[in-house]
Length: 448
Image 1 (cartoon, rainbow, N blue to C red):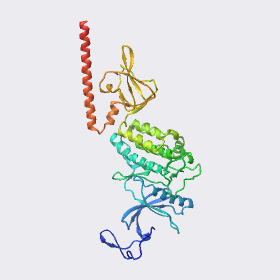
Image 2: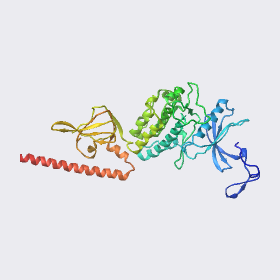
Image 3: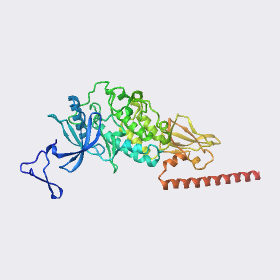
Image 4: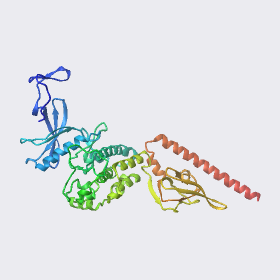
């Protein structure tokens, strides 16, 4: 397979070819180019073997049919299409394709790819499955997740939907390399109404409605229902959400006694929330919120694109992973002046007003919007709320508690120490001010 081409007559010899260091060796042509080093893995109808390329002196992965009977014409074309699709998806996080032998004359087609060293994301998750999540354990997993998002977002710009996204199809190398694998069941979208750069020589997919493609325990409802015409970029958003679920819960999205039961769960889009499925992991609220949106049953309620999903995860990773989200209707009171409390708030969306009681009644002292913080005084020792905060519009806030803040700052020693020191000093100063105020009131009362 893969005979050398383009060598001018008279160049080289049949006896030897010079390689690095000028050392002679026997010429290697045609089928003798690759030395079989054993099976790397098997799929439903394919087998991947490790092969040593004796010309370039590197080890590659060669995918071919792993069944005795020859492939049908449709299967053959699908195999060729997989090579062309993957080969044109030139991205740092998509496994590179080196060559394609289309087969013929009794030979099955073969795809030559980079042999990725490392382990699957499923294995990485499995190693930490019994441990509670922490900021330190989450960050490397989310870094992998973001790079998977990068690969899938790029594929979407080329009009390709993977539709079999799962931790087993993500390889993680020993030096942090991340590759999205197995594009064999990808769906090629039509360019109509989409800003895409179409692949060359690959026609849009035209499966019969009712065909079910993908892995059941990670499958979107539209896939499980065989709604092929509904499969689009948001199907991969669901698949990425299912990968995020595996990171949070250390188990597949659909957990059932039988595959038939799992299939029914997939059709209905029913799953246990990650905080219920694996309470010992203590998944952070912000990521549970993102997962829920990504894996919404209705496509219209999911993130509109992989990039939007990626941006939300990246924003949470920069800060707020462990903060819960809460919503308030317009005119609803968030905190009441004089009440006790132990929560601070960060405005995510909407606006709220800070009101103070005066002799003339309640007065608006300040208006707050996204990014603003309020209620922090009680976290740092204040006895009660010093103002009333009311939602002026529908309001979304992140809720900050001391426990959540400790989780957020885990591993950031100097920042945590700075905040603890400031909190202690605030508390001491506030206590001293209250003591002086009481003493002043007692003295004033005595004079009266």
